[in-house]
Image (cartoon, rainbow, N blue to C red; front, top):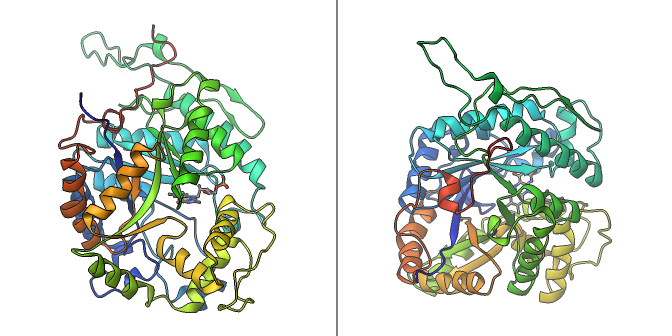
Length: 441
Ligand SMILES: Cc1cc2nc3c(=O)[nH]c(=O)nc-3n(C[C@H](O)[C@H](O)[C@H](O)COP(=O)(O)O)c2cc1C
């Protein structure tokens, strides 16, 4: 019997996942708006048979933070994800193309149309990372002084995704005979008008794009709060998470899977993929040297700023060499509590905490040889802490190439990863079924 295979995503950030990546001698400093660079990354990931590449997003940044931000590259100058992935669709043939788009500052009709288009352009390889906007200041670019509350964000998101999936089902799969002889372009019995009127949105439809090749593009969800987990349970095919500890990751995994039955879904229909920043070296010492070199490039004020973002409060007032303070994180996002728990568990100072968040930004960091890294991935996979991983190379393109050349063969030799793509669409490769149209018998 063949062993179950893990799924892998390549989480792309312009210069790399490490906060100081852009200062590394091998980094491409202008990566954010360098399409040649992204084409190279997509092709390396496809050579490594990754399920997908993933692009995170944030709608702007605050110019008031420029004193800090001028030392970083993150979120400052980079491509809009849908535009970028449309270009990459034509430079690749099998790899999935996952874009983050927010339900808080976009309209469901536009969203359905954009993803349906990307799915057609790519031949069924698109995925939508549904976020509700993690950054408070995005509201200022969309006519709101204040961001929606977490509860309201997820209530809107649930209705939003319901509408988008409804719009994708506007047309049945065979709605377009396009018969030149008879002059019938579409079969009007196979057109379904949504007529949605809800608490937050009113959308009549129909959508002016044919049903996507995947039926519905793959849906990803990355929130970890209660309403986020319900959104996942109802709609997601993939759940991204940031877990640093196998016990916590197993608990999260079991929790996500246990919610599926309520929506008539089975456990295989969702792939849980925590992030892993793999720092690979030919030897352990080599990997550690690489990691230390990057950690030393993080300016303290930048590290503190990122820690403040993680904690959703100003952390610059604390002594960096004192133990991490036990601040009140009620009402903050789940990552703040997670950071407090980690600091307590490891006796971290404020500096330890900011160094940790600068490296993996809250994600799991593994430093070692390809075999060490494969050991850890195998353990998480077999222990049901993960169905796969969102791989976060510290510096692009070199660390993605190294992962492909060193870690992928190690996983393959253990029977844990594919040796060729199973299908053409992202759903086929992930092993998540194509949704039947509701009107199909
Ligand atoms: C791998 C990963 C990628 C994420 N990418 C984004 C992103 O691009 N934009 C964003 O606003 N939030 C992003 N998030 C944040 C989540 O959508 C969510 O807001 C966060 O995990 C907090 O969850 P909660 O609000 O349910 O507590 C990401 C989270 C993870 C784990």
